[in-house]
Amino acid sequence: MLLATVAAAEDVPGVVINHIPASSQIYIGSPGIAVLPNGDYIAKHDQFGPRSTEHGHAVTEVFGSSDRGASWSRRAVVQDMYWASVFAHEGALYLMGTSKNHGDVVIRRSTDGGRTWTQARDKLSGVLIDGGEYHCAPVPVVLHKGRLWRAMEDAMGPGGWGRHFNAFMMSAPADADLLNAENWVVSNRIGRDPAWLDNTFGGWLEGNAVVTPDGRIVNILRVDTKPEGGKAAIIQMSEDGKTATFDPQTGFIDFPGGAKKFTIRFDPLSKLYWTLSNPILPRHKDPNPGRVRNALALMCSKDLRNWSIRCILLYHPDVDKHGFQYVDWLFEGDDIIAASRTAYGRGAEAAHNQHDANYLTFHRFENFRKLTMTDSAPGARPGEAAWQSPDANG
Image (cartoon, rainbow, N blue to C red; front, side, top):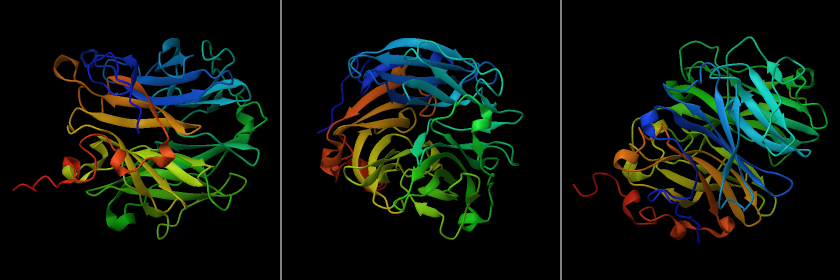
């Protein structure tokens, strides 16, 4: 069964790591999670919203837990860091993302458990790509054949959000100085063709570096398409990381929740790929699928192309002000541990909307390989309200 520790804050699922009231007009974004060699958990988020500094000196907050997620304390406030993945590598902790909303590509390192961080000042100290507008999300940094791989986008195409994203991949030798820009290979960039998906393709973003069953690196991306949503895209990568290619005839797949950010990881024990996504359940069908984030599903696939929902881990019947989104997660034995950008609450404690989250929450989903739909959250079990169309009762 699922483990969902009830937080002190009223009925918020999981363990509350941080809370920023919606009235502040500063919202919680880009959750990330990592585990240090000593067993400590690290979680992070950044700040966005009209009263944040996301377009100037963007802020990322870093938290630690020494009791397997039961309690958390703030370890650092990192300026000029945004949309970052957090990951442990060779005994150190890294944040890799952008310097601000559509800023430079930067990476920072901590050798004291996330309490202090290097400054990204130049091409030798963590500024990996400058002079443009870049975008990403807390997606996996994958070790494969002696290299670390991380998907990115620039935001320098025409047409505004979604349409302006150009997807690319970055990689570096795993034993290199990751703060030195010369050690990183950057692929070509692939932009949007509006004719794809029968002229419904709005753009792609927030890609995952994933190793395929036959040992190749691909980039699997969130896809903006309306009104249905539920698609992802697979970009092929060359072995040296320099060349990205996409075939629109074969590159789009059905992927429940594909209109929102997701993280894919491979489990050697089950030999399955797993993800946590935000599918749209029948009761909540909406012409804007990217904003329906009130259900968090555990999904799996043998081949990265055919995905099935195994369990609805979290659910709330209200779409407008509730969301479990941008979830970053890791395997821990038989469990999944996760950090969620959570919009929740009622009355004065309510979120501004489902997108503008007011909580960073920690979750442990026990025995995830054995979960079935009957283990789903209340309201989302087979036959319950979430699976009924809104007009089922006339």
